[in-house]
Length: 308
Ligand SMILES: Cc1cc2nc3c(=O)[nH]c(=O)nc-3n(C[C@H](O)[C@H](O)[C@H](O)COP(=O)(O)OP(=O)(O)OC[C@H]3O[C@@H](n4cnc5c(N)ncnc54)[C@H](O)[C@@H]3O)c2cc1C
Image (cartoon, rainbow, N blue to C red; front, side, top):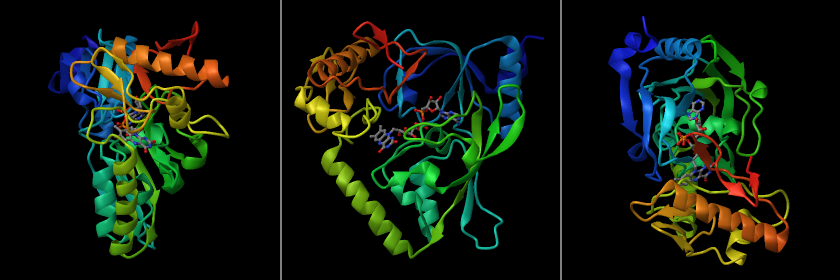
């Protein structure tokens, strides 16, 4: 039996990916799977591994630049894993959420329970799985700060619980060693719902004032270099704001955001990213590292070097 015959209920062929990303760019996935439970996810992982099909995990697509030619492999979407529940800890401060739960939804849920901590991620449009994978966050902290452990499916299909200390969480990075996140356990702190909401709102107000939230973007293009000025500041100083290539442009509000003005191509976005990288390197001697994730593979070539 072919691997694909086992998954007809959750499999589609040549599924367009652009609409599943916040940037709205990219071709189709040869195979597209949407497992309905951790057990089914584990079966999919094992079957794809055995068949030697390259796999890509999809959350809310808010950090992705997908090539115009699409992905010659299997994209596995976690969006059907939507469970949330309160943990069984005696203090009642833990919550468990499946990988496809979006952070804004989880934040609203925890605020209602009077549990604080996730407001550090207010306004980040990703899923719990994507947030762990990129250790999403900002000036007020990262997702990993409240993470106790994660349930993951290893590349061979085994379901394991990994303590957060074993996940190599760093600045916008983690070490999952090929595993996919199926669920997370978070430890929060009791607080007044009104106080938590006020902190979340203050962060959102700051974002609205400084980031192009109304536009189609994939968040920050580059991570901030260590020490010194932010990537956005460096890109601003080399005149990237408002730069345009086809239907892609660099935000006038924040130079570290690339915008799809409608119908932009991945190629045009890559050209702008490369231009920003090379201008900053030329002027400041700083080689910025990509924060955006490229599918099917890193393809932004900067000054003759493959980034990352
Ligand atoms: C307007 C806007 C503002 C943003 N602001 C911020 C910010 O302040 N801070 C910040 O850190 N990010 C920010 N982002 C980026 C993005 O929202 C985060 O990186 C988010 O955590 C990505 O989650 P996702 O579900 O969208 O992941 P996706 O974009 O779907 O995937 C991103 C990466 O995570 C992997 N992945 C996804 N799900 C899983 C899983 N279950 N298991 C293993 N790997 C997985 C993917 O394979 C891919 O490599 C912003 C984005 C936008 C559009």
